[in-house]
Image (tube, rainbow, N blue to C red; front, side, top):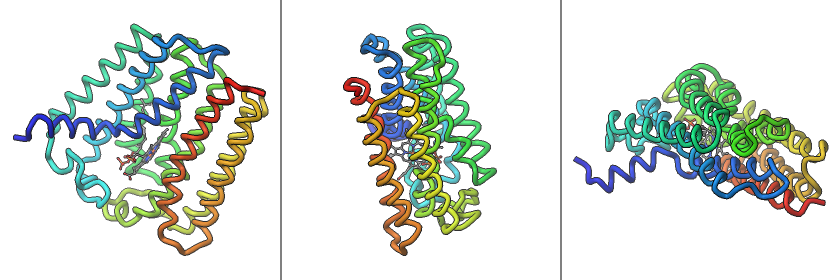
Length: 291
Ligand code: HEM
Ligand SMILES: CC(C)=CCC/C(C)=C/CC/C(C)=C/COP(=O)(O)OP(=O)(O)O
């Protein structure tokens, strides 16, 4: 029997807290951008809580589904389920508790549209991506990435109760960002994925092809990031910040492609996270000081 504190720490770990924190930040930006003035803080808090709970449930389900492959990969062998520190019943009940409380909170305190869309995102990540696409095709993270890109739209609908084209631009940004974010890591962890027969792009098409694809996606990302400015949704603060961040990302991608430095893959991956965080901070600042 594990001590209760260890079980709680393990349950917390399977929620992928840092990823969920980032998802919630992008949702909050969606909330703020949906209105001229700051939305109700109560509504923002409950919506963030609901989106966070359902994202955490999705992450826990991913740990349950992937425990056998996680146990064989150097990056993930020490995860709570892979190591048997918690069992399937504990993890499943925990995931259900998170999912139900998140859904009910969104449905009652926010709106039905957001509750259903967030549940669809959970399904998209935990079932469509993890259970099916991850094992099926090297385009797994391109298609599956849509679930992780949804939070800004979920944040937007939390406040307005309606879908809006401006929210789609934010989704498109994260959707285009996800492949270079993940493939940089997948290059570094290629042997891990090959060992467990997961058809990640560097395994199926090689690292050289993947690096070229990363460069192309970072160029596409730079262009997609211009859309909010071009339609008048954002101002110059966002335009300049996004250009600087995307040129930095492109530089990492280019160095990764052209230099034989093994450390560059993880450096590119780590930069991708900072890139997205600062891009969304820029969207926030721009919203309040738009010129
Ligand atoms: C299908 C889409 C995605 C895939 C396959 C993916 C893959 C990954 C993987 C494998 C890691 C773990 C790296 C490690 O253990 O060292 C990671 C880390 C991370 N991802 Fe993603 N990611 C995706 C989408 C996203 C999205 C949409 C966000 C946020 C908006 C995000 C934010 C992060 C953050 C913040 C980390 C660092 C976590 C930490 O340091 O513990 N990812 N990602
Ligand atoms: C409700 C909602 C918005 C859901 C979004 C869910 C979510 C947690 C998205 C994050 C994407 C992510 C971390 C993928 C990595 O999975 P992986 O299995 O490829 O990586 P791993 O090997 O580290 O587990």
